[in-house]
Amino acid sequence: MNRLGSFNKLDNLISVLEAEILKATDRNILSTKDARDIEKKVATIINSRRVAHEEEPAATIPSDAVDRRRLFETIIGARSRLPLEIRTAFRADSKISDEEVSILLNKFLRLGLLTKGKKD
Amino acid sequence: MLETMSKADLIRLEHFARLRTAGLVWLDWEDLLHEAIDRVLSGSRKWPKAIPFIVFMCGTMRSIASEFWRERSAKREIAMTDLAPTGENDSGFFDRIIDENQNPEREASAHEVLTKIEALFEDDHAALAVLTGLANGSTPNEIQRTAAITPKQYATAQRRIRRTLSRAIREERI
Image 1 (cartoon, each protein chain N blue to C red):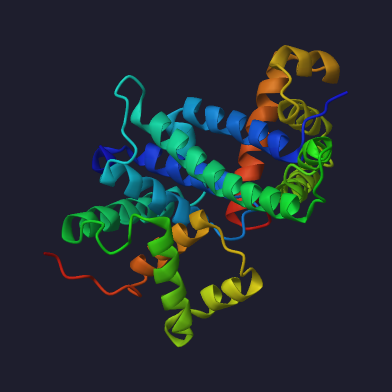
Image 2: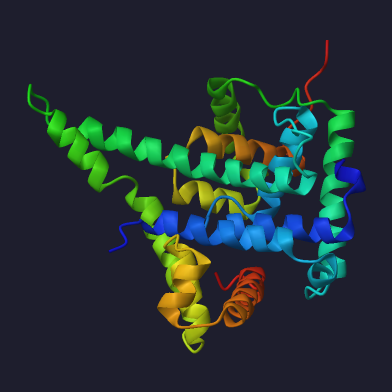
């Protein structure tokens, strides 16, 4: 009898699919529906992050989890500045983890919701 | 290295990001990809040159998605132990509650995703058998023996699973 939990089963399945995607020929991968659009979108994301890193090296998001949460709460406090999807998501689950705070702050940064700090 | 990735590898990145965020509420595929790229660019994830870059990126996204789930799990366990009774013989209680409820939230979400995936193959018995075997961690030989299929049937079923699943995830049916 298999006693694996659902999460481990899903992880197993995804790992196998990842391995298959790695093994698949380029020709096969490029035959994906909308391949051209996907490729352009991913290239745009990579380029936008490269430009962002060159222009404003990671100084706007604090490295300390407590400071990140404080910044997050300050931003959430100014709710009218936030897109509806984020306000709704935050209302849906106020027990937000440190990892989620970090992901959301990066999202705010990309959306232009964080003001660039002055560099010394 | 990111800027010189081939067209096929760019598409592979999208596949990986979508797979790893299936069923997640807070993290969508673009968030995961952004986060992985940021970690590589900032140097917080260093590429061991012994492995291909695309394999490294795949592992990076997997690791970020795992962190995301693990943190939710840790919060849940702390919350449950906070509620537990105190006393000299409570250690068994703590072990039991953590063991039985390792992460009900994560298990429920994963179960929901698996159910949706299985439903995609309800009319494809070979694919469903392969899918179930892979999820249970069985080897290809074990799956072929249990499902009474040839290696060729196994390989084509696995390709159908990848294509069907990729399409369903992209269409946000999962």
